[in-house]
Amino acid sequence: MGIRTIKGFLMSALMAISASASALPGAGSVAPDFVLKSDNGRNIRLSELRGQVVLINFWATWCAPCRQELPLLNKIYDQYQNAGFKLLAVNLDDDRRGAETMLTRLRLRFPTLFDTKKEVARSYNVDGMPATVIIDRDGRVRYVHRGYRDGFEKTYEQQVRGLLKE
Image (cartoon, rainbow, N blue to C red; front, side, top):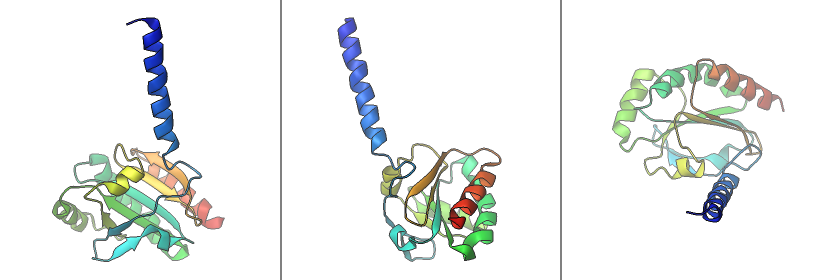
């Protein structure tokens, strides 16, 4: 391959990456709306939560960091649920039975939604787990976190608290 061919290939690849990145729901963009069935059997529509700060956490049973992070989110949910805050855990397992077993074991107090077709995950460009998106009262994505490390939940809490004050 000549240098010109390599340059053309690299430019095409960069343009493709830029085009897909610009379509991602990044900070400041409107959060893609969705409807998913929750663990209590009810459908939850994101757009119906406008006026509240929403934290969406994408997870799966096979994800060890997810199992570590999910119980820690209970504290944030308990502390801010009466202040205009919603927390939604979106499970991406193909079979929800394993997720339901894990939910019972973890004793989560916030709603879990099931995205078995991965449509919501695709609209949020979830490419690894856990992935956390925090949305403001106007329905705009304000923070996106990929992965989990000890202490991330403190960052989430600070960001949620800040958005609740706005």
